[in-house]
Image 1 (cartoon, rainbow over the protein chains, first blue to last red):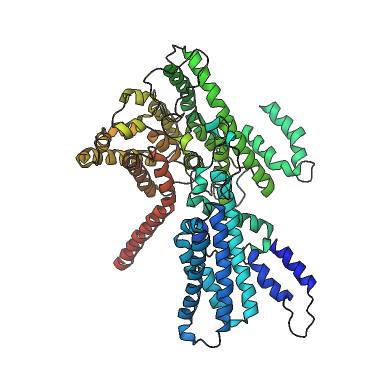
Image 2 (image 1 turned 180 degrees about the vertical axis):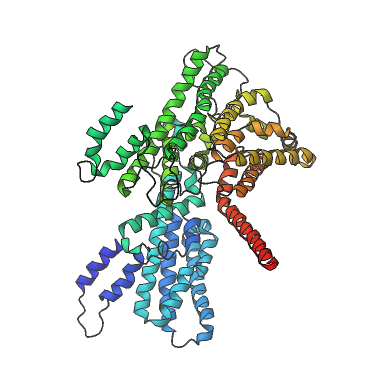
Length: 231
Length: 398
C-alpha cells in the first residue's frame, strides 16, 4: 500500500529543480527498499526478538510498529543533523541518548493514551533502544547522510520492520486465538467446545511458531524475489 | 508380475517419458512404478560399489510390516476399551470393527495429505518421489489418540511434511523425525485433544448406552503423574490392554516389530539397546532417590519399579520405531550408543519430573535429534585424534 501511495505523491509534485528532487528515484528507493529487497527482518535478520515477543496479538504489534517508525524517523533526523558536530569517539553515547529520550517520549505517550496496550508491550517499548535495526541505521546511514534522506531511510526501515511484525501478528492472532484486534473473527459456534469442528491452534501463541512464521515469510519472499537467493 | 511389467513398459511408460504428453508427471509415475518393481539402475562402469535391490522403498516397506501388528492390535484395543467403558460385552470381531472404523480414516488422512504434499513438491521441483513418507504416514496415526479430529491430523501431517522435511530438502535431509514432529505440533497446538484423560478412549454413546460409573479414561502415565498409582497391572501394560495412543500400548507386539527390524538390519539394535539401558538407569536412580520427592504422588511415581517404566506409555514404541530413524539419529556406530542412552534417560526423567508432559519419549527423541550431529562430530573427532596418535607413535617408532 505504502509503495502505491508514494508513487502517486511523486506524480503530483514533479519538482523540477536543478537540485535533486525530493522524491527522486534514489530517494524513493530508500523508502521502498526495506519493504522487500532489504527488509530488516527477513533479509538482514535483525530485530527478531521483538518480532517473536509481541506478535501474539495484532494491536500491540501495530502500536510497536508505529512507535518504532516514530523513534527511527526522528532519531535518524536528529542524528543526521548532529552528524558534523558530534566527535567520532562519543557518537554511540550520543546516539543512545537521542534514541533513549525518544523512547521515553513514546513510552509516556502510550501510557497516557493506550494504557492497556502499554502494559501488554511492557518492557518491549523500552527495549526499542536496543533494537539492532535502529542503532544499525543510525550508524550506517544517518551519520553519513543529510536529514531528508535519513528521514526517508528511517521511515522505510521502520516500516519494513513493522510490516513483518503486523503480518506475523495477523496470522498468529487469527489462527492462535481466532481474533483480530481483540474481536472474535471465527464464529463461536464453530468451536468444538460448542459442538462445532474448529479449535484454535495453541502453538501459534508460543514463540517458536513466530519464528516459523517468519521463516515461511522468508521462504515466500525468496520464491518471489529470486535475486535474494544467495547461492 | 511379468505381464504387468511388460504392459507398463510398453503402454504406460512412454506417456511419461521426456517429451511425451505427461512428462511433468514423471515423478508420480516413477513413484508408483518402483513400488511394484525394483528400479533398473545398475552401478555405472566406473562405480566402486555394488547396487543392491533393497532400495529405500523396500526398506520402508519392511518397517511398515513391523508396524502392522501394532496397527491391528491398536484397532482392537480401541474397540476393547470403548466397549469396556460402556460396560458392554462385545465380541472380538465387534471390538475390532469398531476400532477399525476409528483408525482407518486416520491412516487414510495421514497418507492422503502427506503423500499429496510430497507428490506436489516433487512435481514442482521435478525430482524423484522420495519414499520417506511411507513410514511416517503409518507412524503418525499410531501415535495419536483415537479421539483427535481428523483435520487436526491433517494439519499436523502438513506441518511435519512441509516444515519438518521439505524445507530442509526432502527425505534424508530432515533434522527431526517427521512423525514425532507431527505429534509434537498437535500436542502444543491442540493440547486438549492430545492429552488429559478424555481423549484416549472413545466414549461416543448411542441411545441407551452410558459410560460406566467411576470409569476413568486416563492413561497409565496420566494416573501415575496425578495419583502415583495405576489401576492397570504391569502384565496388562506389557500385553497392551491399557489406554494410550493407538499403536503404542502393546510392548509385546512392539518387541515383535523390533525383532523384525533387528533381524533385517534396518533398525539399529545399538540405539534400541542403549535407550532401554538409559531408561532403566534413570528408573533405578529414581527408585534410589524416591525419598527426596517433593510430593507423595511424585514419590510414588519415582518408586515405580524401573522395568515398569519401560513398558508404560510410548517408551517402547518410540525407542523401537522412532529413535532408530536412520536420518535424524546419530550416524556413527559409537554415537548411536550415546544417542540411544540419552533418549531413554531423558524420556523417563521428563515423564516423572514434569507431569504436564507425561509422554517424555516424544520430547526426548526430538531433543536428541537436535543433538545427534553434535554427538557424531565428537565421535569423529575422537576417532581422528586416536588415529593421529597411533600414526605419531608409528612414525616415532620407525
